[in-house]
Amino acid sequence: MNQPRYKIVFDGQLMPEASLETVKDNLARLFKSDPARIENLFSGAPVALKRDLGEGEAEQYLNALQKAGANVRKELDQAASLSLVPTEAETEQAVEAATSSMTCPKCGHEQAKAIECSACGIIIEKYLARQAQLAEAAPAPAPVAATASPYAPPQANVAEQLPQYSELKVFSVSGRIGRVRYLGWTMAMLLCMLPLMLVFAGASVMSSVLGTLILGVAVIAMIVVGVFIGVQRLHDMGWSGWLWLVNFVPFIGTVFALLMLIIPGTQGVNRYGPPPPPNSTGVKVLAWLFLLVPVTGIVAAIALPQYQSYVERAAEYQER
Image 1 (cartoon, one colour):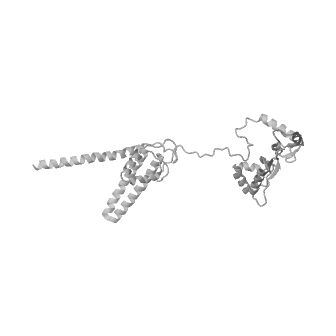
Image 2 (spheres, rainbow, N blue to C red; image 1 turned 120 degrees about the vertical axis):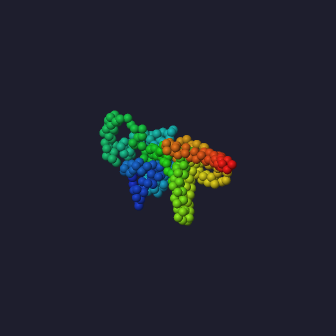
């Protein structure tokens, strides 16, 4: 003889001093379901929350759900108690139970076989005929059935939808920028410093203290913006923004700064977000201007001594 199996039945009743909203939240958490589906459990119709349980398992579920505030009960699960190879007595008992009991097709209430459901009051044959007519006239069913289990995991796609490109934010350490935009923004920062240098020069004539103050503010602002765009460049490479501090290491910092200009960004989304948007024409122009600065400096470093030497030779020639 097999051990009896049990089921946990719930008909919407609450434990004493339990609030409805609290119980709904507790059940949604226990069954890992959304509140909308848990709402279906409180229609008043008996629902078997769990079937085919041993006595120990049934007691555990019973205690857990009652602590959650649901006034559930343990009932014998006749269907699960049947053996795969039943004895003659068990077969007779199962046949007798099947012929003498029924389940309401509308509310699921189990009762003795009758024409009318004692729970919801429908006439069984009329209800089944009406459902057959509706099934013939109804369109093809949706992929997700409306009668899905209220405690099943939600089927909605809850994954975060990332945008195609990251948002450009100069004054932030979040986001990503590519090599061209890194050069263009650096050049724009240097161009913005030119008016401040003129203000510094004019203020120094009136007061050295005021000029030093303006210069200090300008230098701090340039360092802060440099950190912002440098961290975003590292993010585009898939590196941590803290690596920007390597720039202060002698010799290694110079090589690291060159690597920030050479290494391309990662393709697609990385752990710091979507890729940066395409470069605008203005960014490309500023980037080329930045590249002309060192070239101009090199040419000037070569040409100025030659020009100075030429001027000195010309002066000596005139003296003769």
